[in-house]
Image 1 (tube, one colour):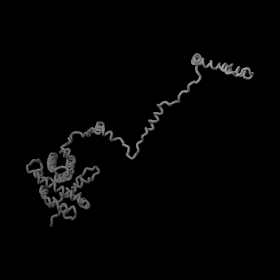
Image 2 (cartoon, helix red, strand yellow):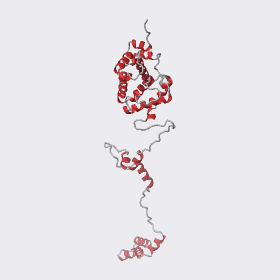
Image 3 (cartoon, helix red, strand yellow):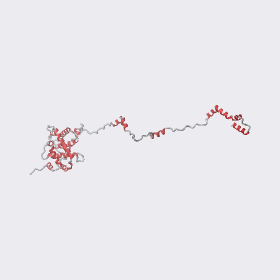
Image 4 (cartoon, one colour):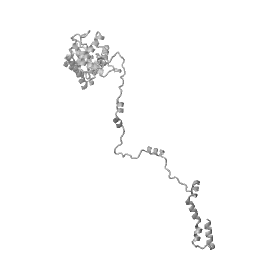
Length: 316
């Protein structure tokens, strides 16, 4: 009577793109799977599918809250295997990059993963939950953090696991702890620029930086002039003052008037002065002199008609 196949062996026996990819990774990255305590009966193949499934869950969280749940159980992995359309070239390239970085980190510092120097307390082996968590961590940060930072992140994660748990199992509570650490990695371990966040202090809104644009505008005369609109060259410039200026000038300037008409008749004071003047006396004498001039000219005055005329003229 034969031995019954395990769940992992049954999944490996099936054909599909996920199965083919997992088999290829197990063969091409033996350094990673040598970290496992037990690889018998396709456990390395099953753990590879678990890593695939969790990376997809982080990229596309199932819950509405956006917090990825643990999707490594025997009941959830078959759902991923049925989703053959998700295995495209972009995903294959990303997963290959994650496993390549994983392998390079092991080669760079094996003690971080093997614990050969016994720097870790408690569980000494590389647990399956650590395999899944490290794969997710590399998937999220390999493009923004270098290998030295990633090695420090993995060491800190492994130490945090052992500080909070005595038994390391691939369970929902442990995944929740791992996700909190990974999501806030830059706050716990420090960002690329060296900044860190104290998780025990309430977050404060960043203070706005004073803008220097207004200062530059006020201190630079050329910047103020450059903001004025300049009349286009093709538009003729007006040589007349603005209409408002003309109206203001008309309202403020007095209306010019013609020369004032002078009086022709002399006033009382002028009349008296003219009577007493020598010119006026000569004019009066000449006015009364015609009768004498006529008589001396030899004009006959005995004529009754002429006599009346001279008499009338002299009486004027």
